[in-house]
Every structure is written in C-alpha cells, then in structure tokens.
Length: 235
Image (cartoon, rainbow, N blue to C red; front, side, top):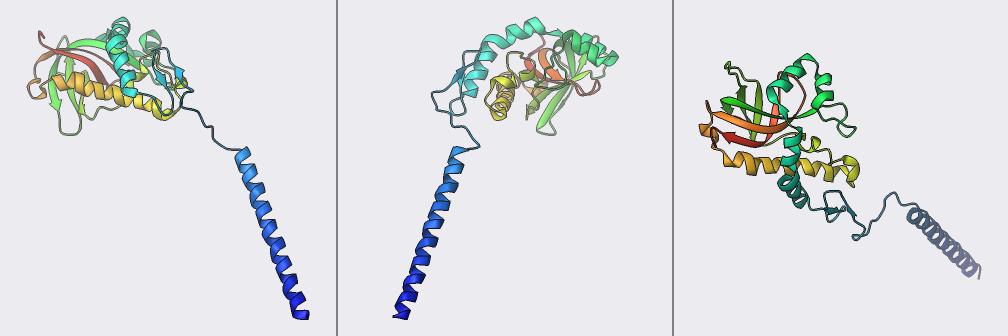
C-alpha cells in the first residue's frame, strides 16, 4: 500500500514537471514570435524607381536595370557631364578637392571619394595582359611618350566608378547593399562585353584612340579609367 502511494506521488510530480516544461516552452515561443528581428515583405510589395524598374529582394532584375540605363541614359548623361581628360588631371594635381567641386561626383553614398567622367585622345603605349586585371597605358595628346592614365581592359574590371558617377543611382533607393553592389558588377560586365570585347588588344600598341569613361580618384599618379567607349584611329 505504501509502495502504491509512493509511486502515485512520483507520477504526480512527473506530470507537474511535464506541464511546467510545456508552459515555459509556449511562453518562450510567444515572446520570440512577437518580437521577430526581421521583416517579411510580400513579393507584391514592390517599389518603382525613377528609371522605371521594379525591384524587391526577390524580383529585382539587375540586367534589365543596367541595360536600360546603358542603352537609353548613360551616354547622353556622360555627354553632358564629361570633361577633358588632360584638364581634369592637371587640376587634380593642383587641388583634388577643388577639381572635385568643379566637375567631380561625390555623395554620402561614396563618402569623400571623388569620381570623374572624362574623355580624351591619346596613344596606346602599352597593353598589359599579364594579370586578369589588364589595362592599357595611354599617353594623352600632345604626346611625350609617358603614360598619363590607364584604361581597364579586364577580363576583370574593378571598381564602382560607372555606378558612382550616375547621380540617379543611390544606395538609399535600394533595399540592401547586395543589390546596390550588383549594379557595379553588371556595369563592369557591360564594359567587358560591349567595349573591350570589340577590340583586338594585341594590335592596339602605338595606335591612337579616343575614349570616354569614368574613374575614382585614389592618386594623381594612378588614374585607372573604366571605359564606356573606345574608338581606334578613324573608327
């Protein structure tokens, strides 16, 4: 009899413990679901940017976005904003901030870095394809046999200069940093396919070219331009 009562007491204690565990589990789940550290956005909750492209975390088409800007807006915009390469480089050597204030691009998205859109005419004095981040060295007219700047040739195109010189593209307009970064990568892919892909790099040395492009200032002696247009000789 005593054994039966003791067993019943043990069973009652186990039932109480089990009920307590369930209650605590339910309480914890309620707190977590009520205070979620993330936001769920429905696929149909999209915004439309000023370039007419819809995007969200799931449906943003970076290729369509970049192609629309490249084909319809980039060249007219660059034609309006471009400056003579030789003049810009000369002004940068005198006072980079003054040059930036006059015709550079800078915003809170890029911090204090200056970006420039330039055009110029020059002679290719070297085509360096030793690394994947290839480039051509260009001597600007009037020629003195010394490289004044470099144009990226890839196959790896670095930097964010094109994106950062288009004032309608702002980090604040995008849902996250990943999408914003994807714009630069896709622009650089367009440079490789639409600009560099049309050139025979092996035949460019000692030839005259005209170019249009953008660069981000790091040093007056290390200007690396991302080209959006290169024409060889009389092409």
